[in-house]
Structures are given as structure tokens and as C-alpha cells.
Image 1 (cartoon, one colour):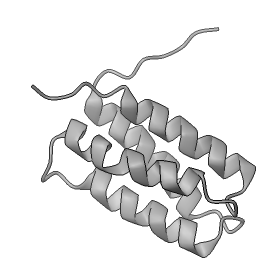
Image 2 (cartoon, helix red, strand yellow; image 1 turned 90 degrees about the vertical axis):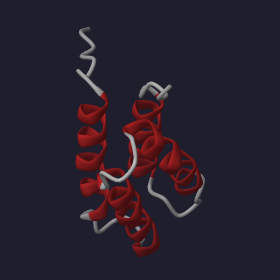
Image 3 (tube, helix red, strand yellow; image 1 turned 180 degrees about the horizontal axis):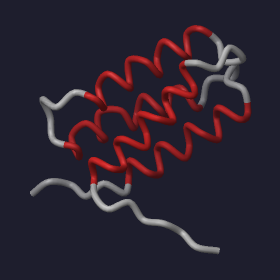
Length: 93
């Protein structure tokens, strides 16, 4: 099994935004979860903060969504994967 490691923080964020788009456009996901995913996407897409700061800002939001009992299992798995990817972004010094 080959694991590909993204080149840089912006690539990780781009991958996460793409995954969030899938959640946002999935009609099997409750509306409040899709709305939260859209807000998270806006935070990640904003260029006002550094990539590590944006990642830190949304990880707790993703955790909150992932613990919602109404989230479908496939979406919960995606959310956990997003959190893991964002945690791989190095902290700015």
C-alpha cells in the first residue's frame, strides 16, 4: 500500500475543502451539518490567516460535528479523516 503525502499545507487544505464540498452536496447529510461544513470550508478557504491557524480553528468544529448523533456513518468517517489531515499541518513558529 502506497500512502501519498501532500506536498505542503496548502495542498492539505485544498484536499480538505474538496472533501467538505462532498459533504455539503450530499443530500443524505442533515442540513445543519451541511451548513457547518460550509462554514468550515469558508474558514479554510480564507487567506487572512496562516494555514496552521486555519486548521487549528476548524479542528474543534469538525470534532463537534463528528460527535453529532445525526451524522451518517460515511460522513463521520470523512470528518475524522479531515481532522487527521489538518492535524498534519505543521504549526507556524
